Image (cartoon, rainbow, N blue to C red; front, side, top):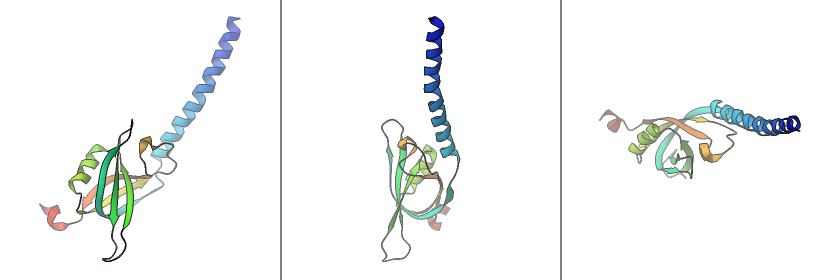
Length: 130
């Protein structure tokens, strides 16, 4: 009787651990593998910390190609608090955001967008020299 109970318990644990392990492996792979990377230039309009349990910084960059044209919004996620502080210091200034795109991240706990900001550079030369 005990031997049969041990077999059932072993199968039950395997049924739980194998899918959990596969989900963890998939999440790790989606956060490690970079689908694309690049830069966007514009004005940071908003940056706020969001999330019930997993706190991330979510923001909007206004892309203006030519004066008088309709502005386009670029939504992004920041997971590093130091990068978020650098972005907050440049809100309202023209900046260049360096990002990586991660496709297939299984939950919004890691961010609401697939664009993760890695660094920010100030483009206004007079303010960058001060």
